Image 1: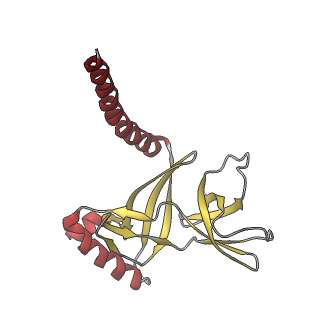
Image 2: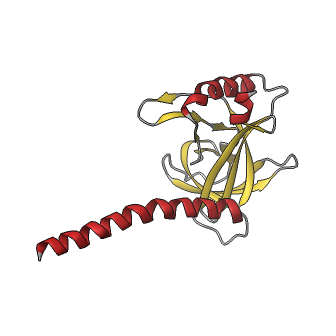
Length: 183
């Protein structure tokens, strides 16, 4: 009788291990299909981590907001409400400690610094993972493109739907970074 219970438990665990990743992929695809795309301008920095693999760490130009509220605390979760500027890039329309009844898209972020009305924050989509063979070349191309910021247009394409966020790709001069590296 114990073997039957163990077999049933094994089947339940196996189904859970299949269901959870499938659900995660479906949620991401749903966000990409029906979410709103925003372009975030980036700044250079590129580490590699032996535990997490090859990736590009993205720092965004949009990392602060000026406010009259002086009660923000480092480490606190806040809501960043977005809009597009006249060039088509994301910018902060407002920030809040509580979820507002608003029609605009938002992301949650953490306060990293506060001083004299300036709230600095870190956006949650700051790592872009790459194929191992292209990661180093992409790292160099990304840093080089950001260093010569005069003529290069470097940004991350992020889809937002409700509180779900998917970092789809990083672009250099409107070319996906993986294609840019291949050239």
